[in-house]
Length: 118
Image 1: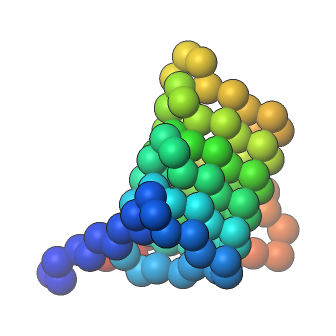
Image 2: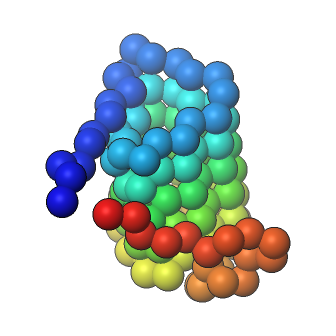
């Protein structure tokens, strides 16, 4: 079994463009573009303007865009502006969500369901 990789985008980093990672991703900076990765951890000061697709995500900053995650944790500091599709959802008291919540990822038309790659 290969060791898992972990990539970090620091607080001083701003990225314009889509990000695709086979690794787990920790974002403290600002991203304008869609993010696809195995697992995403977002820091409190982070802002993502684009769609998120991942197996798991732990969001603590601002997200403006759709979210499609199997296991999603939204922390109390999070500000979510967009529709959320999930299998398992945890929301801390105080989190802000402005969008629709939909249970089940199979409802997404024309896209292949997420599969866990190890």
